[in-house]
Length: 416
Image 1: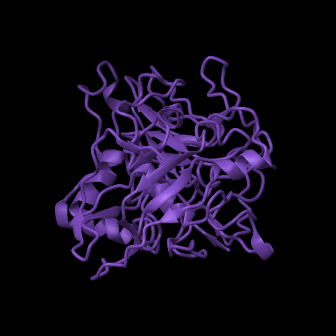
Image 2 (image 1 turned 90 degrees about the vertical axis):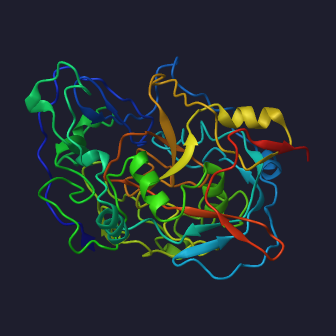
């Protein structure tokens, strides 16, 4: 078993005016207020006013009908192959998640904002085989001098009235207690840590030496965008991410199939042991794992479940799938809603996260289930959030050219 370097970082003083950023399950967010940046994680249930209600449980027949077959494009793999990327031919598929059949109270709401299941078409593209690693992000920083949001010291203009001694750079870190705690108090395991950033993922007493092949974390959405632009790529849409994650398998619970541990084999880096105080590391790793340590999906993509959450380019709305389904037909190359909205925090701008992380468990979060969704405030990174990039293409009749800008925001639709 391998354990990440560094010890548990001590909490730092909070600003006097604290604004809470409430999340569903283990979905990460941080809100910068006149006080500080703080991540708050909260299990279900939320208050009735904020809760996104799931529909009645689907019957097996309804699930089978909802998850029609994936219809891939028949496009030959273009040459040359971009280094470290996998060809995704695109096509039509069923997007969304069914109600998990066997999860307990910690995971049963994972599909609330991922329904109804609806038909989507995506064009062909390339996708990074793995999450962006520390060594790859380091090359970007060395070439550009880029400073991530977590490394930037807040100013008095950013937070009027905040004491100068409380204006410091930092990040949100999973810091497990040494004993069982109620799961309704997220402050028992999440801390805002001075000096935490991509170079020091769990705080100033930790570093990335020896973790060059680990996914980079503590990256906010603008940080991921900056890297993608430098690399000649972009971030995937939510639909592109899910099409790639499913690997052509329609209606499966996980990116590898319907059984969590086929033949007893661990397929992803998730949480084992009692959450949040004990990570038993039964999958071989305590905390994050280096990329590409588990079996890839059928497209050859690694870590599309577990390890770290991944940014997508879509704004988050819990009712977006309902909007698409109501329009009927097949949604082509959806780019997400025009504006974000989270009923739990209407004022905060959030993007969709996908894939779950090393903290996902049936006790608290089961969003390693393919099709389920996370969300995050755009200026926030944590030590269980990373990203990977895509490179889109245009022209499918022998003259394929890279195109790294997204389709128009308004999705095109066609009737089935």
